[in-house]
Length: 372
Ligand SMILES: Cc1ncc(COP(=O)(O)O)c(C=O)c1O
Image (cartoon, rainbow, N blue to C red):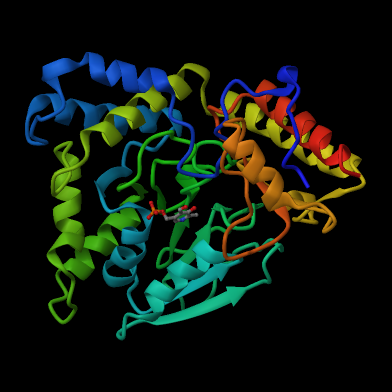
């Protein structure tokens, strides 16, 4: 259907990367890292240059999210998936309730479910619907996902917690640009390869004093088996010294630190406003075109970080994306693989320019309308 499509040159975006993660890493970051020459890559994480990087990340995030001074910013290897298990093993005391609405929130639930000495409960909605978490009596941890990357649903609000309940938020693909007051959460964690434009393999977990206390308390419970690599006390002790427990990828730390500096130049408020403008552009386009529709029907749950747009079944989305990909014009906007919909899933991350999204939407319309 699209084998012979030729994109008009004025509709070609300046960068083809619109994927929902890993996201667009600015090429300038890579050049700047190369310019550090012999002074960073190949350095131990116990030495000052790498500790300075970790400190830069921790202080930068504290400023960006206006994190209260008694909160801890923990950093470690393994990414958000690793934290799913680390939370199930070392933070949930007796029972976790998971609010799920897609692949990633369910993956986290499955991690909790596997731990034999805790109970895990799932409150779910079908894919494409949004969910609003609540405080559940009898649960000591409420798990929710700021932005469900597989479907493009974001949280509309979070509940207040009582003194015995931890609110844990997986902020992997929305953290930094989807609205949320981090000081109202107990654990706000993410892998940095989305809005924060870095590589994978790392986690950042912003923790309230209540969450820290829980981690240290359960660490002393010798009846629990917690693997050494997932030990919260070790993680917290190292993070307090601006270190990770085991050896991190320096490039991941470097890119993350650069991105935080970039985002701090604008500030959290301004970044959220920009994200909203991008979302308005993409969802507005989907509402205007008869062959498109928004996958998320309720506007309050539509993500400002990942937009999912249904396309009329007559249109061969995979064929179109294959052609645009082989022409090196657009990468990564196919539907989440397990969702298998005739759909575009478009990253609205901070480094993806509004002007490029404007070109992308016009380009996709131009291609589709050429075959209608
Ligand atoms: C919402 C969400 N949670 C968790 C993950 C897993 O992150 P990682 O692969 O870094 O463990 C992802 C990855 O896309 C995600 O989007």
